[in-house]
Image (cartoon, rainbow over all chains, first blue to last red; front, side, top):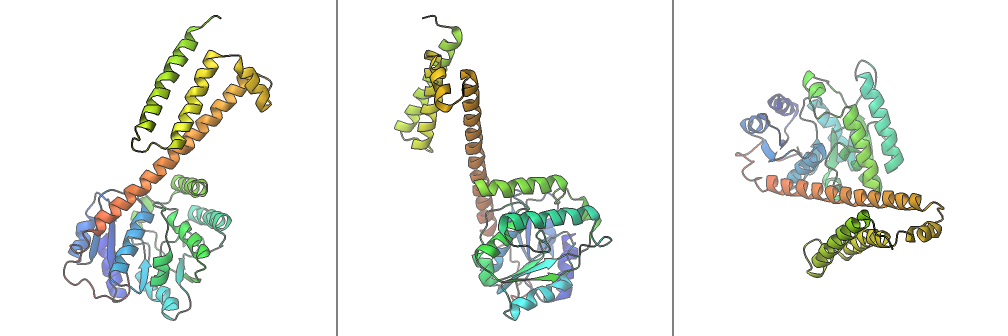
Length: 210
Length: 126
């Protein structure tokens, strides 16, 4: 699975690819190694946010000027990377948020509702209204990747990044992206489903009082 | 003054808990803070005092404005339990963050091994 994603990214352009295996029990890590990309492995599962943060730190260690984060389940189309990095390359902004199309047929209805709730919660708690607060397909300038600092480990990471954008007065733009809901991405147990969505909401509220 | 069994049990438990708490605090054992010690003294000391002087709850009830003394005790108990849960969850949150940081450092310590030859050239990240 991850091999397909890596090959797609390679086909889309010349990028340094970093794969973070977040304590998975399948062959993801070895598949990534076989593809001769930078493979990093969390010995235990720490969540999407923790894995993304590890990947960003690793990218900075490699001297990346622009860091693009994307999910490893194949739902993001690497041909969108160019559109994501363009505003940063032109100096237009520090962060680019990929926005998934929220129309029936392109996104499951339940996801559209969940996404809208996520956007409202993010706006209420963190002060910025964005079109897709839960998208993991984003691009950061080196400055933004350095200054954004959140301890969120799970799915609330994406919303906490919005908070960091607001707190640090970073400039951002939203870019439409394509999304493909594969059987794998819809069936994985760790996906941001209804129950995980509730848990994310609780963690966001809890983060305000702790 | 008639003493009931429950009073003896509560006094014994409170005494043990206060002794343990004091010992840990004065021996400066790891993780023992003044706040923790103070909470222990208030919780277990308070329970001990109520067990010795059950009528003190009447004054306590009047003090916080609740007429019925047993309601005052129950309400205070709920508040204390809430505080304890809050403290526990905060501690768990902190431990979770520390585990993530340790996992990350361990993973990144193998970064040189994670690079089998030249990957894809170093240009844009990820």
